[in-house]
Amino acid sequence: MLQPLFDDDASTLEVREPFVRNDEAHRLLREVFGHSSFRGDQEEIVGRVTAGEDAVVLMPTGGGKSLCYQLPALLRSGTALVVSPLIALMQDQVSALEQNGIAAASLNSALPPEERSRTFGRWKRGELDLLYVAPERLMLDGFLAELEDTPPALIAIDEAHCVSEWGHDFRPEYLQLGTLRERFPSVPMIALTATADGPTRRDIRERLHLDDAPTYVSSFHRTNIHYTVEPKKEPKKQLLRFLREHHGGDAGIVYCLSRKSVESTATWLNGEGIAALPYHAGLDPALRARNQDRFLREEGIVVVATVAFGMGIDKSNVRFVAHLDMPPTLQHYYQETGRAGRDGLPSNAWLAYGWNDVMIAARRLEESGKGAEQQRIGRHKLDAMLGFCETVECRTAAVLRFFGEELTEPCGHCDNCRATPETWDGTVAAQKAMSNVVRTGQLFGKGHLIDVLLGKESEKVRRFRHDDLSTFGIGSDLDSNTWHSVHRQLAARGFLKIDYEGHGSISLTDKCRPILRGEESVLFRKDPMPRRASRKKKQDLVEKLGDAEATLFERLRQYRLELARANEVPPYTIFHDSTLIEMAELRPQTRDQLAMVGGVGLVKLRKYGEGFLAILQGKEPPPAEGADEGSE
Figure 1 (spheres, rainbow, N blue to C red):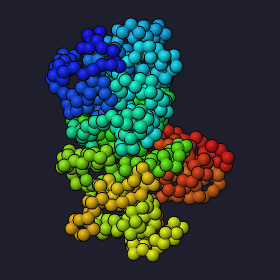
Figure 2: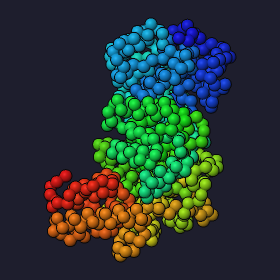
Figure 3: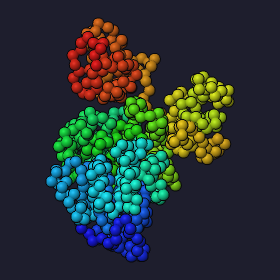
């Protein structure tokens, strides 16, 4: 165990001469952690916590959060208590600390009884510098009683966003951690996270009783992360092209929303010569552990995973993070992409997005059981995520703005900076939207604003007499989807401000003035998503398909014919050609995704979905038989 600098009781530790503490902190920084100097606010945070004060710390992944409590743990008497939500996170941190000669251990359910007993004894004998515990174990009455007999040197709450219901990874067990301040009022507490917007930050301070603690917010700008976003066409092939062109032999993470997609993608990548391993909560724990261990220990391994993978993984040379499905919020996206390039070297964040992603995320939100306020905030965050995908400006700037940070100039290395996307002049549309926000009093959400622009006489429009406004119906030249995109892009670029904490009302920012005065123009990204086929001849549509899509369309059409014969109905009554073409283009892989294809209702999904999904997944469909109306 490293010799502590002070012998005072942790609860009564007083600050010595600042230059003494500064010298010792720098010595340990250099000798133990191998760094020649502090970064950003690290030195001030370390000094504050070492002196017995609280702090709230927001630093990006790879920004040096851990040092902010690990170094004070060595400078103060006793054992620092670190609350961590995941066993993998604990094990990774403990392993790294032990490599630095620091006495660290964890108490978690994965340890055998004898190991837990040995760790407990080391802690009680004062042999540990840091002890990592899960919140569930920490809040057991017996453990808290033991803790009161042996007060910690400091309390660190890692992944502190888990305490907030507004956060992207809420953990109910974190809600109890506020009692630590009541039980240990003299012990310094530090809360740390890599991602937290305004409401989440306030929740952290309130729930952990850190109202008087300063909040240290480092820049969220990861200058080595290069963002690329593509609309989905053939997502697996797009991913393969990205990997072959940029990351042959590199380690990386591919995120998918569903377990089934994880396994099918990993299998497919292996078939294409890429060493890929699946990881999700439904896998056998032993297999999951082996796959994680291979990723950590071997070079060039690609893990295909749900978001269950990655938190606490400290592999420094992850060269890319790819998303085959759009995350529901920019908080999720930022944290997940932050797992690339922890060594500071250039790394890629690649994302394929589609309207199905938005629909599935919205449906999951509706089915989450969350209250109306939670769902409203979730919808706004989903809009912000889609706005990021659609933006024509620097993507890095869009990410930073979500966290309240402005980029002084474009990053120069995202896809939008490297090549100008296809756009349309939306100056007039922007002026209409902005004027409408003003005319309605800057008190309403996007849905109502679009109803006014389109001239829809809804009950709400009539109640507020907005059908009398000059902006009523002035947007009828564009459809609803385009207006949604206009509002999202205006918000993503900082022209509109959404009140996430109130009722979702939209207001103007000062950036709008030059647009409204006609001094600046606005370009919007063109809607890249394929539109549903309608009133077009089959041959005109089929000719636009690539060879692979055309072959798939014919296979779907043949199966439709087999079903039609078995059910003694005309083929078109099962699915129209336009529906089969859309299937061939989008290649949905799940029932939920198939339900988003035009012409696929719930009844037909139940009756025919299994067979068509099998074909879309490259499998043999079940024999065509007469459909059972009540079958699932």
